[in-house]
Length: 443
Image (cartoon, rainbow, N blue to C red; front, side, top):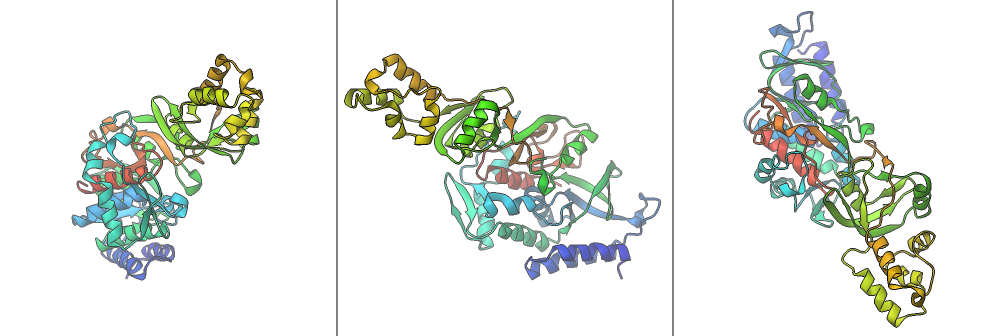
């Protein structure tokens, strides 16, 4: 018979497993019951005593993409695994990703796609667990998917299918997932002693998979960085990534006037360039190209925007001047760009004159303006709207093969918590799967 405190934990799990397939929920609950019966908790004043501490081979903090993948792989090796999650559901970020359809990987996710202070760090994990590996798992569970564009793979149905798949796989290897659990203290004690509001746990391997502070409304915090600092690991300065830009003053008035207008472009900053589209908003500029380049931008820097990528605008203007000398410049440009944008630019840098009234110097100036356009940004919309966190646990502190802290044996960091960031389009999920997989082979 389980103690009252243990029964409360199991009932709490049962409440939060509503909506999962019965087979998955039952397996997770059976595992919890068995663990509770064999390792009953009776909290007292001596948390280090053998009687009141549950023992596992591996505890993973964070039931997100990386954490669940690590649990699955460790469980396959016969390790006794416990996953602790502070939220009321597993995989909450997975559930909201891709507009609820989860852009779960990218066909072109290779190591050179990622940014980090040590760009070679991600090579080992991403070459050992490729997008094709995860696609195989998806197909095993008969989850229908499609390529949207640029190698981005989405579920045909719901992101919940990916979460169910991961929980089913975790249940199959008898990994226990406990929700609504708050970790209060972690310390070294013949491995690690983890104190939480549902009990104390001693483990040989501790995996931190709590992500970064992006999307705090989903419960995201900088918890992983606190643990890293506690054990003497360095943190690469963090900032919001894949996030919309904000403007103020006249620049904001310009964006407000064009809110909702989208333009294909190439956006560049600090040596990184992305060709997709930008979108004017009531706060500034967003859209895929701008989200991508935001991960490379730092306050005070300029983003260079080519509004007609791959197009020789100066040659086109000269040609139009020869063949349509009486046509207005804005008419010519409105055939290439949204008229509302051309008209708004007409108030500052695009003259409203006939082509035969423009000198070669004028045409050069117009071409330069549109091929290397910029607008002042005063910041971004911050972690609240950021899809990822740039920076994190310094990769020089970790083994690229195992994700284990070099100076702290048994302590692992995976997923977004680490200083490895991918572009938009499923790349960051692939890093989560790959880093979780690799750690799972060694915990």
